Image 1 (cartoon, rainbow, N blue to C red):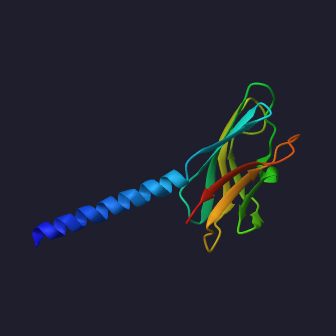
Image 2 (image 1 turned 45 degrees about the vertical axis):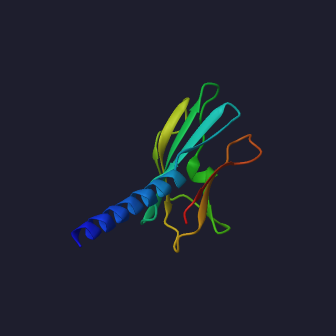
Image 3 (image 1 turned 180 degrees about the vertical axis):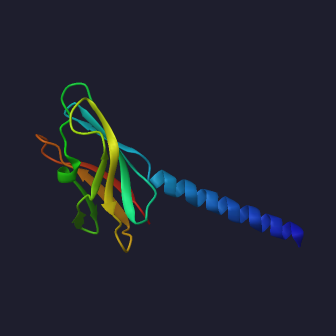
Length: 132
C-alpha cells in the first residue's frame, strides 16, 4: 500500500512539473526585430488582478521615443485592451526596459496578442501567446 502511495505521489508530482514547464514555455520571451529596433516581450504570471509584460527595446541607430501607453494594445477574443500603466525607462536613448500593465481579462481568453505600433512602421509588432 505504501509503495502505491509513493508511486502515485511521484506521478502526480511529475504531472505538475510537466504542466508548469508547458505553461512556462507558452509564456516565453518573444522577440521582434525590424527598422533597426529589436523589441522583446515577456508575460509575467497570468492571470491576476493585472497582466504585466516585461518589455525591452534595443537599437544602435535611433532614439527610442515610443510611448507605450499610446501605442500598445492587448488583443484577446477580438477585443483590444489599452494599457493602464508603464513603469520603466522614459522615452529616449538606445536601450529601454520596463513593465507594461493591463487590467486582467476575465474570463481568461484562449490566447493573447500584444501589439506595439512604432512610428514609421506599416504594421505593429505582434507577440502572441496561447493561454489554454
